[in-house]
Amino acid sequence: MTTCLRISGAKIVDGDGKEIILRGAGLGGWMNMENFIIGYPGCEFQIREALAESIGKEHSEYFFDQFLEAFFQDADAAFFESLGLNCIRLPLNYRHFEDDQNPRVLKQEGFKHLDRVIGLCANHGIYTILDLHTAPGGQNTDWHSDNGGHIANFWNYKDHQDRVIWLWEQLANRYKNNTWIAGYNPLNEPTEPKHIRLVEYYDRLYDAIRKIDDRHILFLDGNTFATDFTHFTDEYVKKWENTSYSIHDYSQFGFPSSPEKYVGSEDQVKILTEAYRKKREWLDRRGLCVWNGEWGPVYARKEYDGDATNEINSSRNHVLKDQLAAYNKDRLSWSIWLYKDIGFQGMVYVSPETPYMILFKDFLARKHRLAVDAWGADDHHVRKVYQPLYDHVIQEIPPEYRELYPSPVWRLEDRIARLSRNILISEFLVQEWADHFKQLTREDIKALAWSFSFENCLHRDALNEALKNALQPADG
Image (cartoon, rainbow, N blue to C red):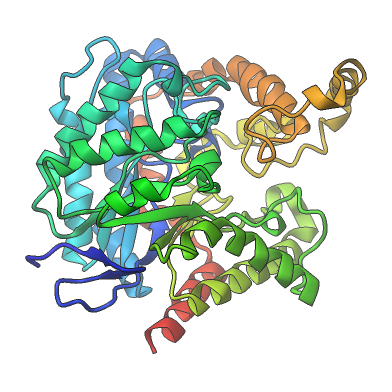
């Protein structure tokens, strides 16, 4: 290929002007690790520090390097191609490329696996999108921005913002001629309380990247976890050429906290599709290009959900298919979350019979019971523990002061859970996770990492079949 994809009106097109619909998945948990995907508590920087403490820096770095190697190989790209999918979103943690103690010094070793996977995907005709999932200070209030707290301090320190502009200048300079990269997703799921600072920052990013690379598409997430564009302005979007706008469309029906079982009733389909259309309404009125950067339900597991597993997953697959039907109707480009994990949401997932899953079986069961991960948490085992705290806040805090940004995405209950369960309790479990590696040989450590290889994974067949089948209508 010699020509980059570009935006034409509301479409993505190739060099001949032919519409290209990008459909694929996010490689979450790889160069931006996440607790529910990999099975550790807390944040990535915490477990990296704890593992170095437990087994030493050399063995710790060996594990993480082997993990990055095993997590995505040629077999993964070939499987992806076999489904007819054509794009993988690559979430990145800035710490691979820059050190907080040595800012603005590029770490060349960070490109070892990124270049490898971009190349593997290209060999199989798969585009990639580079997604900065973690920025200094945390561009959002969640664990996946790897900041260990609940304040998005990226917005409170200009130096954090300047460092990200510097990093994107390095990335743009490196990849400006790579036509198998569909584009850049400069900031995942920002939560900026004042709203206008995000748009102004996007403008700075746009100018910095375009001075180096005017060929690649920019995919800009809406505010408040890629759901809100109402504070974007026509002045900016008219300036931002070759730009698509990213929504994230998770349906409430795809999670354990769903208000009811999803059966695809007329009312449920209406709720599901109206929630999706509301996220893109501002963009559609202006004829802008929309990309759904994340979506997808989570799934039950027999070890935790027992006899109800099949019924729950049948309902979740119904949600999946109805979302796909809405997307196909709009010829929407999308990236489902996610490709690979330990069994909660991935298209493929690590077998329970692997060394990693055997070693952590009891720990993972306890982690699930304590609901220490925020994503798709089932808190029924511990609800009675936290209910008095909820009640206390409701009793002492007047209603007009209970809703704090990023409401309504975070309800009062969610905020209390984040601080008490997902941050506080998780901190006590971090070193315990790392200490599982003590007394292991180098070969044992390698075997744990290679538990995540494609050959050691099972396939979520109903999900993969639904994705494969969904490709047909939009191409026909």
